[in-house]
Amino acid sequence: MRSQRLAWRISVSHQYQLNFDELPASAFLRLKQLIGTGVTPFSASTLWRKVKRGQFPAPNKLSDNITAWNVGAIRQWQAQIAASVEARHDMGGDA
Image 1 (cartoon, one colour):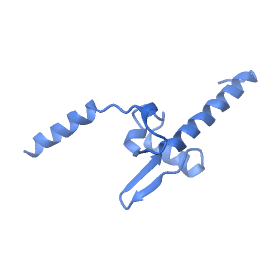
Image 2 (spheres, helix red, strand yellow; image 1 turned 30 degrees about the vertical axis):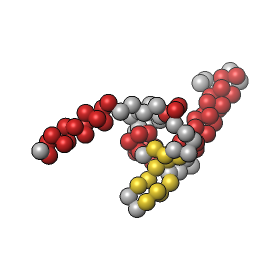
Image 3 (cartoon, helix red, strand yellow; image 1 turned 135 degrees about the vertical axis):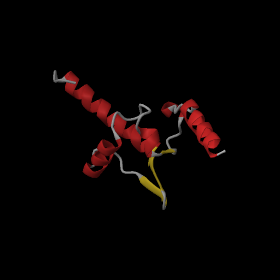
Image 4 (cartoon, helix red, strand yellow; image 1 turned 180 degrees about the vertical axis):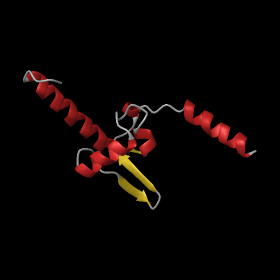
């Protein structure tokens, strides 16, 4: 019975596709939803390192066991990165 529940959870999780663009800015994403889904190109350790250095938005502690990132903050970070790459490109630098 336990293996059937586990198999069901695995199949459901593989069917679930995160559509970041359709989420409201007020939504929150957990770590597993940030890595491996295309929202960020980082591994978990790189993401945490960037948070510590202030290079990625800090997560919110929603409860004792739940840490999540605000979608609006991630979108702002993405816009800043895109603007920085565009500015370097416009100046003739490497992208």
